[in-house]
Length: 254
Image 1: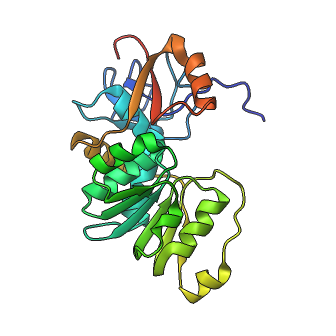
Image 2: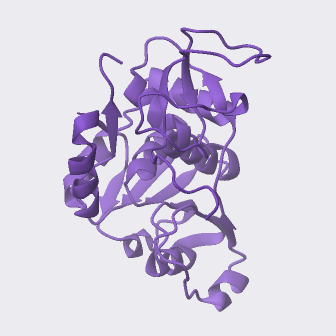
């Protein structure tokens, strides 16, 4: 890969220390977030193309701003924009990882009737506290709920197939996660029930601002802050699937 070596780390927020010549709309000292697609977050400073920088609101911690730059804004766009979720929509959320936790809360805050599927039972009570009508170990329990939209933040072959099988006729399955590279689905069900199966990735600066607005209104991004000297240990915890939500490395007093 021609761009190696790199400093890894994405989902970044902080204070602008310097602005390049001819860059409009940004000044030293501005609070900003960085949209996805930029590496380098594990360094003290990061050079970012101006079109990836978004002015951040006051009153939200940097750790909460940071996770919006990927997980948050993608969850928002998948649920609210492409998923068309609104008041009264019957929604199923598969997977309560960093994206799913936000996606569930966005759906409930939009007035939807929300159900969730997550094998880690430690998250079930929290999901109910966020407004989920019920939480199940797996998406097969969505059968009979007549869900309008199922958003799959896990993206394993079994979850995709189960979503297609259990969304209502003429409903939509929004695939965001990519836990596996392939899935076998019942194409007869897909055709006869006129199910829409949509893939989604990416979001815009407007989606990031919209996500931050949900955070300002009380959305919990499920963040655990660690120091930069704890990054290696944090990565080990991620490999062992010991992390709920997002780990965010915080530098100094930011």
